[in-house]
Structure formats: C-alpha cells, structure tokens
Amino acid sequence: MEIVFLGSSNAFADQGYWNSILVNGTILLDASPIVLPHLKKLNINPADIEFIFITHFHGDHVGGLPFLFLEYFFKVRRKKHFVIVGPKELKETVEKINELFFPVLSMERPFKAQYLEVEEGEHEINGLHFKALKMKHGEGVSLGYRIQVSGRVVAYTGDTELFRGVYELAEGADVIIVETSSSNTRVPGHMNMDDLRELRERTPPNLKIIATHLGACKETVNGVLLAKDFLKVNI
Image (cartoon, rainbow, N blue to C red; front, side):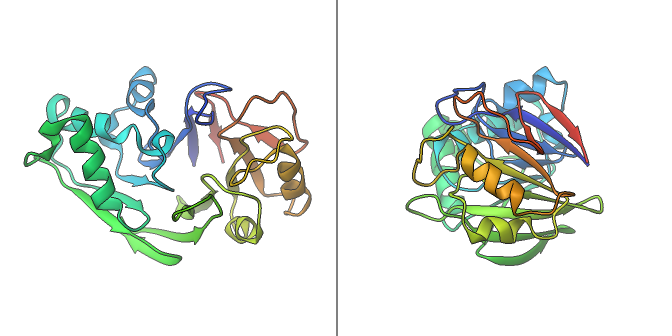
C-alpha cells in the first residue's frame, strides 16, 4: 500500500499545503484545494481516482472537488464513474459547491459521481470495504474511516479531538493517519502534540502512526512519522 501526502498542513497552511492523501493511486482522503495541481506535479492522472472519502465539509477538506470535476468535464473528458463517500447531505453539499465555483458543472456530465452518504458502521461499495466512525470536531458530523486496501488496513481520523473513537478507529489497522493541528495549545475539535504522545503510548508498537494536518510546531514524537508535502510512505 502506497500513501502519498499531496498536502500535510491545517487550514492555515502553517506547515505547507492543505492536507489531502492519496492511497494506492485510486483512493483520495479529503479533497483540499491543492489536489489537482499536486496530482499533476507528481504526474498522477486525476482520472485514476476511483474513491473519494470526505470526512466533513470544511473548505480545506472539500475545496478541491470543483476543480477535479472541472478537470473531468473539460480536460480528460472522463466517462468512468467514481464514488464519493461522506456524511449526510453529501450530494447536496458537493453539488452546491460545484455550482457556486463553476455554474457549468450543473450541466449534464459525461461521468457520474456516485454519492454514498454513510453513518457509523461497516460498509462496502464496488468491492471496497470500510468502516465509518463519528469523530469529535465541533458542530455537524465529522467521520473517520478505516479502509481495507490491498490486504492492509489504513485508518484516517480527519479532524478530531483525541477520544475513545480514535482508539476504536486504530484497532486492527496497520497504519493510522491522525491530525495534529497545534503544538501544546488546546484547540476544541483538534489534537495537539501531547495527544499524539498519548496515542502512541496507548496503541500497539506495530501500529504505524502518521501525523498530518500539521500546525506550526517543531516538536517530534518518538514512534510517530510527521507528514510533509509530497511524502510517500509504503506500508
């Protein structure tokens, strides 16, 4: 399983570009505004994406979707359907964003985005098995995912505080990608470096932990890999 960090920072871009992650070239975890240019920078065909997992609807997590749709509409003339997974009101929200950005996207398209609105629990679509869990990130629903990929399991928290759900998400995973938005400051709805240390201490040593959505901090945590833009990790 190959994990590529197209971006690795928080909404303020304190440590680089906004966070988005590509798994095995076909699964996109959140769609920040830099997805399209960074895919092209890495010579990855945007049309290879088959699944997009959205954790919640903040701009640094969905702002790249209209540009992907625009690329599919005009540049690559995509015909192959793809799946977007996310919380309730997913289709309504994404299509509204698309139309606000580019009204032409309200026209009939040669490709179909298949929307799968999920709640907590096990799910399967087009042969991809995953579990969704509610995270703690302010008002509205924010989901974390545990996805089976190539015989491995990757877990992704999206934005959240550290609570029992993060440990549940990590259970049985080979790697968990967690947000760490600040150094020692306690920001509601987010984790900091102290939380990261606690998570490392309370999870099995063979669980690989990668921190992303990074804020302006220079600290490191033993046994935790801090993501950076364009980092590639093989699990």
